[in-house]
Image 1 (cartoon, rainbow, N blue to C red):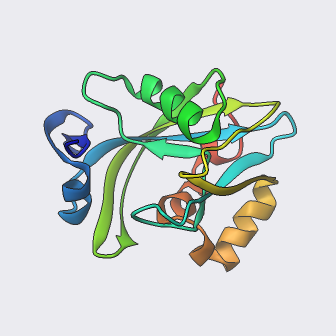
Image 2 (cartoon, rainbow, N blue to C red; image 1 turned 120 degrees about the horizontal axis):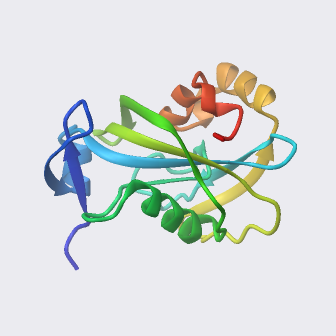
Amino acid sequence: MSEEEVILVDADDRPVGSAGKLAAHRENLRHRAISVLVFDREGRMLLQRRAEAKYHSPGLWSNACCTHPRHGEEPAEAAGRRLREEMGIALPLAFAGRFAYEAPVGEELWENEVVHVFTGIHEGAILPDPDEVGAFGWREVEALRADIATRGELYTPWFRLYAAAPWFSRPAS
């Protein structure tokens, strides 16, 4: 099986080519990504601890899921697909905004992404894929922000950056 490809983009999220996923992370190439933040009706956020087998940021806490859209796949489709694959849940998602960042993620790998962020509300069972998710739980947003401020090393680099964004504390409407 060939390596999964990511969509390379310019600073305005316009496609400029493609690259293998691992190559994009090794060479610090800007690419398109998605992130999903899931809340419950009380406003708590669903977190996942990335499985230890992940090739970067293993064992760190993060948002419900992230991925890269496939060629020909809209970001919203990718968000729904990955939420089902990683957390075993399906729900309506709302576009919350775009977020660009660059950060080292260990083992000489970089994230350099223009991220389409989606949010949604979920009530019910969560059935995570153990190959993707080591643990999960719900956290109050303000307690989560405080924990990120004092123990940031427990969280993925992108999630630490998300904590300052307006969509971090509420689903988009």
